[in-house]
Length: 129
Length: 365
Image (cartoon, rainbow over all chains, first blue to last red; front, side, top):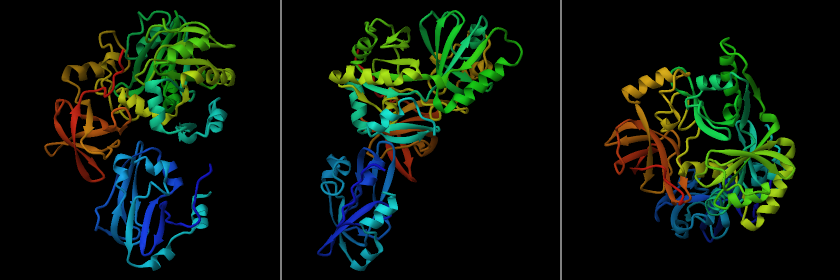
């Protein structure tokens, strides 16, 4: 497989989301592998602020030129922030999946749920990298 | 998976490879959108060597082809290309293809990669029915490379490659020439809606032609373009893709390629059914759809007008040139008019859209 980035400090879902939890708030995005598979992202459907996120349930979706993909919440909680830059520039998911292309922030209700997630090695094995 | 003679180049360029009808083909190199734009603005090269090429020769070739294809074969000039369909007896489509007349009794046919075996058997079985003399049919796909060079700078690039101007080759016509050491067929046509050429030459010359092209085209902004952008380009230009707008259940009349069907030319396979359909009015028609929002419709999405189902999407995607979500849809004939408001169902939810003229994009001439 071509070089794909899997930052060590993040946690991952089987559905190719990454999450970083800091002071009870989880920042969520899609992995470099996911953006490569999707191709050019043209639209990101975001949840409303205040909506409930449930681990493993879809909170939004991504339209790429040739395909659509649901986004699944890596942890449960309340959506406290969404990345409004994605409205004008959905391609940020491709260009900077771990930084400028972050998608939502969730106020986490149960930090124990993080234990259900993959670490970087687990995710690398999962995608066969 | 099968590989084209350019496979190593795609790998070298870091292309994302996918399985297309059993062929390992480049979906994209840099990205569908930048590649699409490069073709509209400058020039791009597509490896379409996975497509099929047949040679049909002999004194009986013209009559045989006249009987098999929907368009008029007699009256083709040497050096002329013809877009046409092969149809089943009931009028549904076997394939859409391009026929080339190299000379009297000397034709080439270029068919979709997904239909090579089917088309060859279709022709061979009809040839074997005993009524044809002096027709030789040969599948030359394995030994033939095909590159499409498309975009406003294509005439400049192909002229340099051929060592002689090619701008005088008329649309849907071709010449034989040389691309370096390789003897080639240089046809002024394509599948993108831009000016361009398709270059057919022996597979053995693939490496030489590709490397010369990269060197010659670099100052023109030449980029390799994958099948992803090939689809978005043809979609904007309103061209059919077999398996979507044309299938065994869709006639050329419904798909909007009636210009390639000459019902007054005498008997051909499917002709009787198509004449009856034309007289009664084909039951469906292909229309253009522009979505109001950003959700993208895909093949199979239901189309409704005032709550009534009227058809479904044949192809749906994001249009890089128009920067919006569009679809081609097969709907009941007469069910809609341009500007009508309709609804497209995407994953169980209805999204507003309107009927628009097609093609969505026409190049400035």
